[in-house]
Length: 640
Image 1: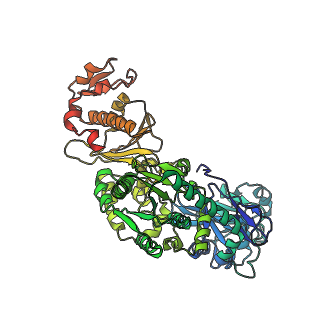
Image 2: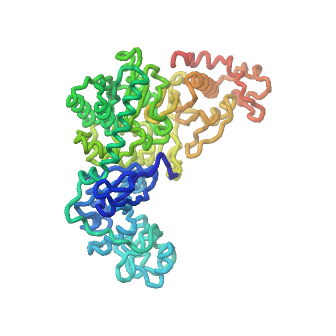
Image 3: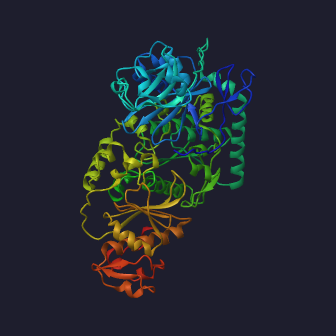
């Protein structure tokens, strides 16, 4: 996955206190110096709660032997996590001022696994708990291994009996000292045949540095607060000044957009510290977790704040048959379940406008980094959004909550890094595994199974939750065939386009998501879309097309249109609607042939066909089409 930099990398470590310190070169607790901790960007560090630590320990026990987890991560130490870019869930684990490994969800095996780095490998190898996942190498193989070469089968002189290809393996010298960590390419028996080939693909290699004993007195988060005291006070002061200054600039009623998550809770507390008494806005999308709704009510009650609530009801379930599964790159659900309800709420309570403080942070995504700290919602004109924590990391958010002894959503202490809709397609599969007992999961799975069956989609589309994309990311392109339907659903009646338009509050940006009421003949559609603009295949899209780098069209009938504003979106949506209806329902009347000034349209097999080498995408051919006028006669003005 590409490296994503969303801000400076603030994590440092005080070796004397063995505690994390944000940004400062001096520890507020002991006055000693700090050193930077290299982590994978964007570096949105967060605390590891007891649930997280136990999850890592259990995985280490499973992979390397009972007791390996506690030996590697003893009680009494501060542990941090860093969610890193990957094809699925990946959390770097930080302890003793260094990254000691990563907990990843393996989407191929559908299970978690832990990838140790050298220092942790050394601790496990010397703990006396290593029973699985090890390979011993001949002394003659060590020099090349220590330079990063792979472990070849002829050099293997011993191995744990249960190694499978893909397992994480500690590479040992003949005395049992860790010299590398890698991924197995063979089973144990094949390694020990002394045949040919790579036995272990080397990931990490070299000398393992001791992690050191745990402190005599167990560390806790109060110690971390003390080590970061001056930094926290400074950042809180800046945030409160931002709140005061923004209120003075806009002279609007003040509200808090509260989601039940940690960032909106911090934002609420900062606004209260600034001396304001805001109303609290909460959108119940109909997909909220019970703990989230309980937290919203409890926080408002604890602070004596008025809660203004809008409910989406069954908007998601009602829209699901129209649009199909929501996806990271096809989030119609944000429009129907968030944008619509928030628009109604604001227009009812704040018709003259409102300044809404929102817990948005640049470290969350490229889109949120680009929005800045103050913005206007282009689809809710009465709302000005502002974030006093735009430059805060997750660790700073948590330290402030610890300092305030605030009641955060308990889901964070149950393995969740983020809180949102329980089936959000932006979630990793590893996160979704934590919610397999959700009461509505069977309802979702029943729809997905019927959807896959109707289209002939393979088992991997369901088991790997590939429905979360319309366009597969590069790391999952091996599953592209799972995106290609082998059957076309039978649809009765005229082809129509259903729309979910507006600003996307999850990712930022202006877009329209829509779905035609029938799957598309992509050969005909791709040909007719040339009248709109340049058409090219979408990488990883399973046969999908991209028009003018602004319009995505998918075989099952879904479309996504992007634009700089609502006016441009309206034009583009109408152009693509007309072209697709013409392609799918053409009766070969020939009206468009006479309208083309370049002679680029002919009849082929009784239907209009565009000679792409002659077409200049002027659009004149589609302005007078009886199929468009009478098959799908709804105008986009009605839809918008």
